[in-house]
View (cartoon, helix red, strand yellow):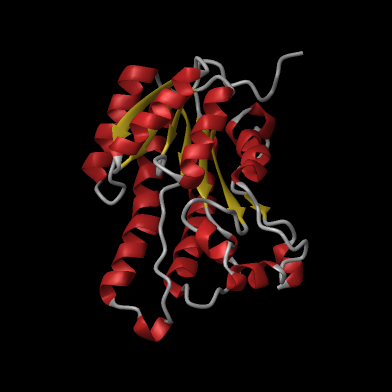
Length: 254
């Protein structure tokens, strides 16, 4: 019986791959046999990621991509397909947040979050979807959303709004592209420790916050591997338009 989680020879593109979850997703997919196009604005950090993937005989190439610029998106996908083959999977991960009280949010803050998390995610998905439709082999698009997409979080109004948009975008694109065998799903992580937030969770305030969680712990990137691999491979072939929540029961306790 064939392994439903095998990704040998498939071309996968990961956005926001220079750090955090994007870096981890790239390593996980490469270890499964995928050829990975790692994309970000910070290409200097992508070089070390490519080296790490090649250290276990994986295949990866780095491409500069600014998700707020459709021309940059198209150029990166062109490069990925030229070097690594027709795109099979997109991990639409690039995103950011601005943490402020809503009354202190500026138009620039709003534009920064929405241009990256909504406009950026949308046009990356469109570019990938066009390629998958044109190739005729279908594919899988995995949008990285958040529990913030369905529950309000204080000081993160624009971030919550942006992730709600990503969740609904997932459903609308899944509806449009089902006939082309392009699956579109999303993952909604809870609190996952990465280099961006690790200092906070080491503070007394951070530790007190974690004690409010159902299981009094914060997640690690590896906790998302099961959902990622299910949606990226034939194991998730019967799923489209869905959001997989991986939050350790966060909603039950807060």
